Image (cartoon, rainbow over all chains, first blue to last red; front, side, top):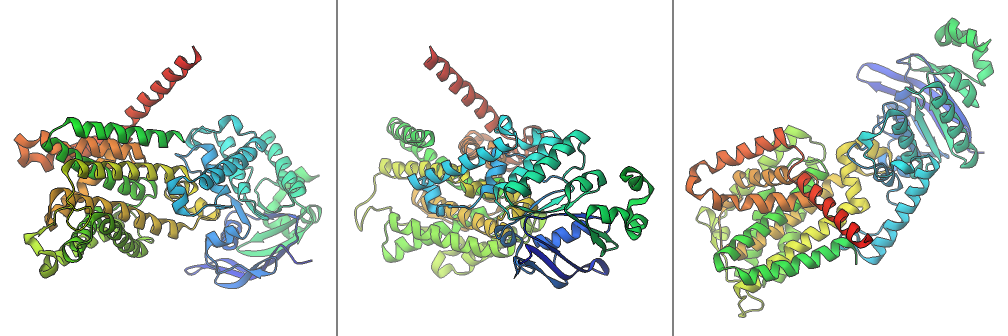
Length: 260
Length: 317
């Protein structure tokens, strides 16, 4: 089977700094892949390289066997790569449903002049988009906040809106940058359940960057460990927990204690 | 029919009746106010929604005014052909300006658009054979067809219908996915891109669209005033238009209408202290930026909601 996501020797440079060095990894369809590593290991850089937000200096990124590196960010988004943000980037002055509607976006969209003249086709298209966005809001328990401005939402709900917005674009690969940061433990548990459901029922492949080891152990099928911009280990959560290099580099005493 | 379409028809009927009730000079002032509304609606889509500052909106009015007037003077084209062509030319040039503008922000974009304004001024002044240069250009009397002149009240109706059409289309655009993309590009280009929004293309399209509105406004202005010169479309005019949308409310069609309608009448009020009018405009702009950054539209929204509540209550009874 073709890998959903495949990185071949991806290197990213910021001036003289090598933020990602010769990174290769392969994620199977439907897999939940964890990406861990200390601060500055290059995890977010890698996500940005996959989405086209930063330029890949050398190497290739392949989605279902098709190279996507070098394409514009929005084209990669349209080909089915979605993302959520570590620091949520809401469209602040817009309502929650409008935020999600940007995700619904261009599907079946009428030409511009039809929208400007509000023809029946334009109205029908808008109704369908709103119906789909409403469904998505409902699935994430956001329906009561439909017409709330994003800037008025508390952080936990913003995180949920961020996820709903990304999923409204119907990605086949979703990159999640620290989905549980700033959440309480019970909120994080809900987030884990949601992510599992996404991968299970919708068949979305997940690449999850996460600092919280407890979350990662509970969620990921396989884990990739990065340090100083390079991949230093890969394996199942149990393997990773026992890997001496990983313990040395990242997990430390605390995590091994928690794992015992 | 949707609520905004009903409102549009209602507004047009009201404006037609108003035009019958007032004298020639007031009709002229109303024409200018409605033209200011059309231009402000376009500028607000660009600046208020897609988040791009422009100091050359008056230049696109100039392009609309000169192109439509010259088409009328040289080829005898009536307004209903010349103004759409002028708007298309303005949109094309707006799109070309949007190309470099896609990568510029804030002060750099302000400077680039100011540079464009200067270029347009220079072109008008230097090609005096065609444009009349600094002496200006007399616009032929507006006609329906070759010799059939348009009566003043009918000209007023043309301007009113165009203004209502401009407001109606802008409202529809903002309520559609195109409008949401413009707002998304302003509020977080990063997130918009990740959701598949072609940020650069949206920015460029916003430039072309706003230029088209300005082009129409310019064409109508030439028709109404009967004379155009480059000073009319200078940096002062560009700043006035920015004041309109700030005072009315950024990113809101109702804000454009309120700001332009209220402030375009200001020169009349300020006639006794005319030499201070630039100062007064600047003070108004600063005052609103500091104390009422969301503009007068906030007051309007308040009234409108109260009105709908009252209607709902009346229905319930």
